[in-house]
Image 1 (tube, rainbow, N blue to C red):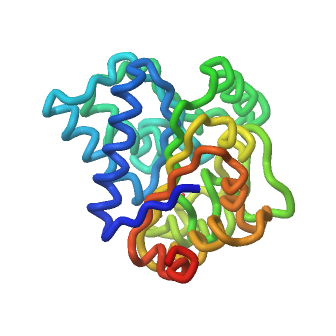
Image 2 (cartoon, rainbow, N blue to C red):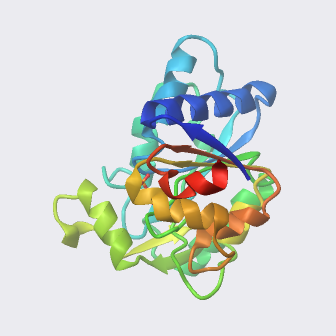
Image 3 (tube, rainbow, N blue to C red):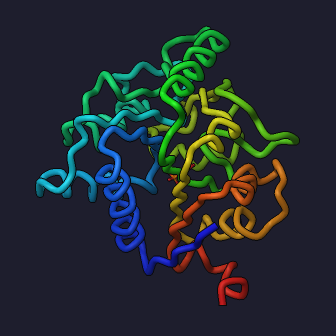
Length: 246
Ligand code: PGA
């Protein structure tokens, strides 16, 4: 794992946008694995700015998002499809028909997940997978468990994730209890993985991801086994790693 220290959220976002821009420049028809949440918003802003400056062309890029709430349609402002349109896709020249997010409105979990795995697999898996990390060490919606997950599947969200995500909803009761998520194995098929983390709430998860035992109690710890992972984290998120990085 290569750990890059960022001073703050803006610095993390700038560095991440630069890495993704390099990927798109080097391989214009690359496959990007994309993430939602508060963490990547600044990165997406940076990519939009590079596009507007004429420095980036998304016309041949395709993208596959990690996850989606089960039961939400893509035009629901709380859905991850809406988030992606709003934060990135509507502002760059990506072909929306080549942007994929699991279909939250399809309640047939088995068929929906198998279809999504088929799509990601047929695309050859992401060249670059962007990841945030949950306060509890989850990646995508792969929550702490007694085993690592394989392909796309339907999960029951943990209380800690429901609480963390409730800040984006009017009421905690409105947070969906289930989600579709790419599995841990699918994430590991990406050729490069870029993990972003900022803020003190992520410090324990970042420590366990990078230096803890490889265990499904911290799903992100499996990334220690991936040959090409870059972590960009700010001061606060790296607070518990200082001894190890010195
Ligand atoms: P956040 O979520 O970016 O909103 O902190 C990260 C995650 O849960 O993966």
